[in-house]
Length: 269
Image (cartoon, rainbow, N blue to C red; front, side, top):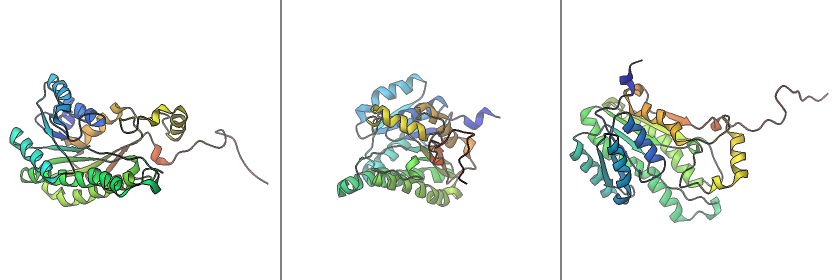
């Protein structure tokens, strides 16, 4: 198989939300595959140490302020990135947030914060970048979803709604822009420890319960996502669009602990 299928040399990738967490792992994987980077955060200063790391890999790395809840901010980011690099090839819509509460406790403001950031923000960043991809008839857009794009979890009502919306948005944009050479896919991680959910992983009983439900018997490690994001960003996925790629250790199969040991029978006469 040709290495060129996964070579991102000469490509420019925007990764939103790269001041911490999985966004940095996505950006690092793309850089190692050869891409130059546009890194974004609401506070540009928080990007500078990571930008230096990416430059140490021999990549150009532009740090830009971006608030995905502000349309003017989105347009400024896209225009500045294009002006700096001359073309935009890849977008990873990673910026997101969550408020973990029982459904009865979710406020109007909680709902708006999550949906505006995760769903509306992803759409308008995609729109701004696609306007610059379409004239060149090439683009790879990777929307970051979640296992909650396909499964429901208590305490995550607005978050699940936003990630389910990402899955539907991905399919719609894929149909809209495929004829222009732009593919749109959704990368949906399962349970990975991040800054947003790290408090959960301090509870050993909860982690044991989680691992019982994951067929591979462990939570995800950030590096488990490297190959998936490069695949969706590269020539390797040229005939893949509108799809949701779950990287979740199999938890979306609905696996639960067996009630009886394997090989035993349980019958009633």
